[in-house]
Image (tube, rainbow, N blue to C red; front, side, top):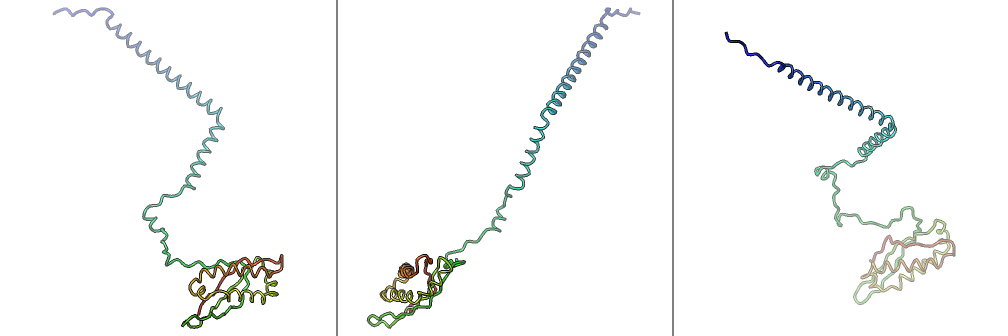
Length: 209
């Protein structure tokens, strides 16, 4: 039999030493990482304890901000919902005419005025029928008007009578505005000083028959 080759002395021992050193190195690195982690955790705990109040306040502020934005934010509306809640447009023909705003106003109703219009040429005789009321600055003024109403009516009648027939027939809107100003001026001039004023004249009927 051939003699077995002899292994060099110390060959197996060197491998064991290298593995032991490598293992020791790995254990050292693991221990260093663990120590660093513990140190970081300790620093975090110290930071939290030191700034605990500020952290709580910050969390509360963020929470309140989320709640407020949730409750006060406008919900998104889809196109279909917009069509359902869309307000229909009203044309000028369908829109109601806005009358004189006399709510909560102090008013004084006058008896109607009826005066003839002189006929010109072959035109038939016509009449103007006018109903109006005063808008007063205060409620007590109606007593002052009662005292002077006859004189006030006579002056208004003379104003109406001086207008030409064609003004009533062709320029009704223009003469109405003109008569408002003239009636207010004449009526206020006949009232006692300090009793109040007539602020406006509104026609409830202005018809040429």
